[in-house]
Structure formats: C-alpha cells, structure tokens
Length: 218
Image 1 (cartoon, rainbow, N blue to C red):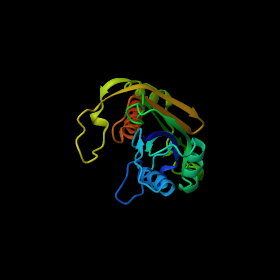
Image 2 (image 1 turned 180 degrees about the horizontal axis):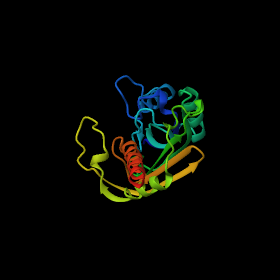
Image 3 (image 1 turned 30 degrees about the vertical axis):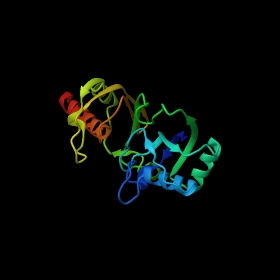
Image 4 (image 1 turned 45 degrees about the horizontal axis):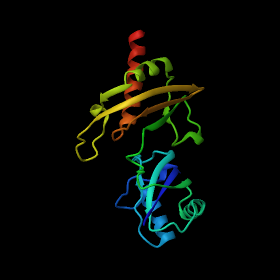
C-alpha cells in the first residue's frame, strides 16, 4: 500500500518558471519530481497546494507525494531530497500523513506577502525581492484601499488570462495588512484562494488608487 508524504517546501523563485510543471522542465514541481525519481528510481508525482507564478518565492509551500513504501524515515527523505535539489529549493520538513490529506484540497487558506521598496534607490540585496517604487507611498491610503478587497467578491477583473477560461472567479479575502519599516512596505493578503496573478493586480490597483486619492486631496 502506498504511503503519503507531506512536504513543506521553500524556494527562491527567480530561477524557475513558477511552480507548475512546464514543457522545458524548469518549474519547481519538475525539480522536485526529478529529485524523487533520482532517489527512488521511479517517477513520483508531486501535488502542490497552489501554483505560484514565475519569479514568486515561497516560504512554506505545502505539497504531497504517494510513495510505494515507507522505506525511509521523514528525516532521511528531507536530507536526501535536499542533497539532490538545486540550492534555491529546500525541503524544510517531511511528514507521513493519511490518505485523506491532500495538499490542494485540504488547504484551509493561503497567504501572499508582497514587498515594496519606496525610495529613490533600490539596495542590491532587495533586487528580485521587492517592487521598486521611487516615489513615497502613503500607507494610510494603501490600508484604506486594501479594506475594499476584504470579503467575498467576484475577482474576475483581477485575473490575468492563463489561456483557458476560469469558471469560478469568486474568492474570499480574509484580511489585508500593510506594514511599513522605513522604505520597506509589506502587504499581506490572506484568503481562501487566488486567481492567476490576482495578488499582483490587486496590489497594482491599490497603488494607482492611493495615488489618485493623493491627487484628489491635493
């Protein structure tokens, strides 16, 4: 009987074409499946909780696989996978779970963290980790704009075209939080799920709206 193994994965997404498997085999899912095949000698499908876009990083992406047996301990799996994976992908921990668990369908929610650097100069260490906005940001207006998204709405206007129609564009946003530390502005959006590039479009709309409000106030 197969054994289900839950993975918690972190990755630096700049070098990869997102999470979902691609024809050119340069997605995070591809790298994980290649690692499992190298260790086990068989092709093992990796199921993720969500599909991050190209360039998006993950602190704790949940995934699972079905193994033919329980030969290795969870620590051995963690060590073996990290030994063959690219350094930009790390398995933080593994856990044997019941067959009732599914990385995607058992997920209760998702959280995206979007970082903005609001200053004339972007430090090199922030390259690829923050959206560089040279003009000052008005955090209070960003917070006010973010409150408009909280609740259950049709977010079809905040979805990019993935090449096929999305039948259900209704999502529930639980919270939108904005924090500022010097020039660094962090926006956290949590909800039951997100459409393709929905978070990027939501953040972009909030920036445009906050600038419009400033011009109106002036």
